[in-house]
Length: 334
Image 1 (cartoon, rainbow, N blue to C red):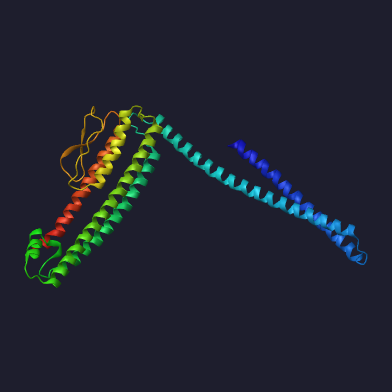
Image 2 (cartoon, rainbow, N blue to C red):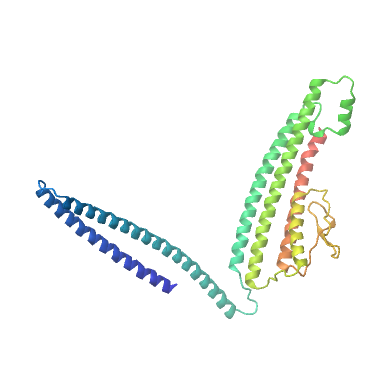
């Protein structure tokens, strides 16, 4: 870095000297042009083609010098930009070296109960928590809007004889079997039923989008953890086909857990020689063989992260089911 800075400094000095030389040349050219102009004005009556040719040559030289000066200025600006980038990189490396020296001094001077702190891991955890907080805030706002919407629907439907959200299959059959139904009321009930179904479908799609965002955040966290483990040297790279298949099955299992509801079916193993492992499916309290995971292939931190993520997804499903039951209870009372 110091040698590069010295080289850049020397190049900058040379460029500055060149620019000064060009400016002096321009001054000399201006003086020469002014002298020639005075001479031409004095000898305006006697015009010769040689004088015009000299003037054209001077103009061409001036234009070429201007182009060279512009190129030098652009090169100088590019060198300034490179210098700024190098300075920022130098500051970053300097901070990292100071932090590592501090941790090393604490590790050497501390006792046996000293636990080293990975600042990079703490920063990655902070970014992950910030993204998670933003996601929770979005979910909170969406839940608040849906709650107000359901409350308004319940208040509107209390005065009517039939509740569109509480129509059962038996009531629909009785309505269809009626010999002389009221067409206007039937059309209104059907429209209200369709609107309620559309609203529920929209709610499901919103929940699915949030689950996908949660899975993306979890995937980013897993990649960051893998990078940290690789930097620490405790990561074991998958070398066999079975380990590769286990990692692919983990991704497929997370996608199935995020996209499915309470009535999810476990996926079968692709290879007949491997035994399925039981993993908690999102939205269910029982265990079922969903995908293949080998505990020896994954480090302990990654296993803990996956288990915590699945527990969080299950708690979110339970909270959503409790809110739905709470919203459905006044409909049943009506």
